[in-house]
Image (cartoon, rainbow, N blue to C red):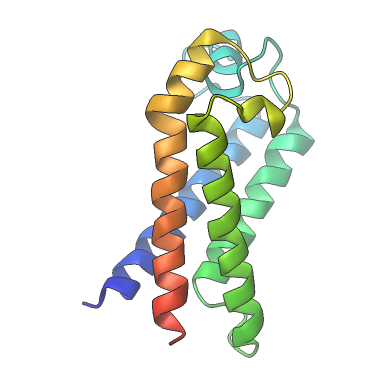
Length: 143
């Protein structure tokens, strides 16, 4: 199997799964943490959890990203490629912001010590890996 196909499948699956998690969070779930307080501190980096609109907006963006990376809309390949490149760019910026300790520039108030530690260890590497995978899927697919 070609690397761009593996990268595309991984990226689409990961983006779709993350969209699903954001939907669950918007509905009040604290998964994978025991309660909303722990969730807010670890995942958001501030005392209050995001509301349903914020969570579902991110879920929609992630879902749209999954479709774009998957090659949709098929009848407009240039739009799909541009959108997927945008997804890769956004994930790259998010990953770099986290590694530099400046996620608060993108998400004001994300400053708790627990969040910053998890951001550097988990969230930022995931964003960078997913961004790279998306870039590989996009560039190699459209040569």
